[in-house]
Image 1: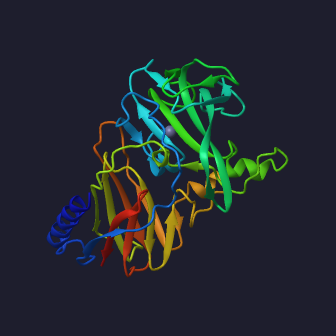
Image 2: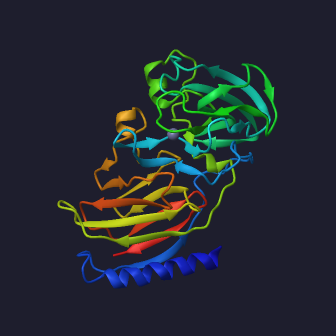
Image 3: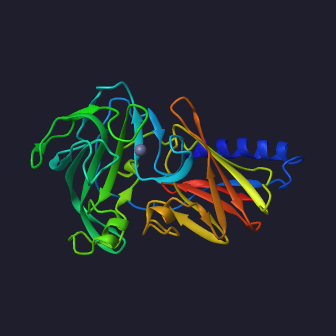
Length: 316
Ligand SMILES: [Zn+2]
């Protein structure tokens, strides 16, 4: 893995040098960086779909094609044929089912939530987390009932297009400790679900997936108002971006570091004082995920890291 990283970095160096003359941002030096993972959840679950590489939206900042805007995607979208079996990621208990049109998931179509115990607790935002919830949206059919025990790999429904979506896919979320989002906790303090943190984390934290570390980071021509701009790309084998940092600020998507998750409006707005994120459309036919980083002040360095703590540092 480390050797592949170096090759990737050298490839980026070559392209940075070639782009030097016309990008207006000068060249740059790209080096590999490694650090501790943002969060280690002591459990391994199985993918809920038969083709886990068929991802059309990953966790975190994205351009939402159907809405024509950016949003913070709280899960992973897997596409496949309508009716494809969707399976439990591990042994657990059905927490709830929400038929199409529910008040809890008005846009989610048919929804199933399954509770899974963690063998040992994990610390998250200063609290011990001893359970997680796997949440399945847009199902064609629901195949389980509340309170039912399920086993790893057991079909719990079929992939569909119910709710607010324009294609057949499973929107899948992992929520730590509580089903209640942070905005919901704020609006319903008496609902008995206040943890003080937003529970959504990248499903890849607990479901193994490809980790090719095939990412690039390179200067691009700044837009009006930018002092500097950088393009980040990732292949389908590395859809687990977790952190972006410069000398001026830091974002951690899974730990919600540097983000305001208290409302959807603030979570979906990627204009931070030190950085504006511009994710590009990424659809089921695209092979490369692209996100541009616009800086109002030229940074001393730009660093990106994935869920394993691996990443790249660009020094302008
Ligand atoms: Zn989704």
